[in-house]
Image (tube, rainbow over all chains, first blue to last red; front, side):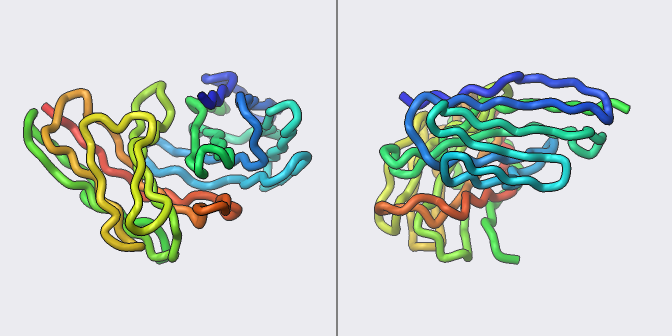
Length: 112
Length: 117
């Protein structure tokens, strides 16, 4: 059974600080996805990571993938209030017929 | 706008009632999915369809049925609603399927908030 574990599940940080969200998964996969969800809204795609060593950046967010360690990170640089949301990682290994399995999500609150 | 359209957005059912959640995508995607989201549980897969005419169970299929009506549409039916089915339901689609992964990711609909009383 594929397990996707995110930590921390809750993160409260001050504006201007840096932090990293971790996503560990239990099986081989070359594809990992990060999503953002605002309260009461749908999931918005942030990053699609398709190979070992992939790194993508958008604004204050940077995601990376280490398939050997089965680990992805989402790094937040100089956080601002607008980044407050829930962040999900998700994996779809080949053997699962390309079904996404999600982590439980990280609720990020950025305080002034 | 291109994307995944779900209807209805909100629904209240009485225990034992039935209803169908509708989903349509206009991106010519092969695969479609139904997920439910509950607090603290992330998103869990109910059913998926890798191509028109095929459907398969996900992690939490009990109490649900699905129909892949054509390439665009994938509906989710609750035959006899129970309070445990109170949740937010998301439909999604991707180009994945038959040996091809979702290199462009998965697109989600806006969700259906269902309450069963």
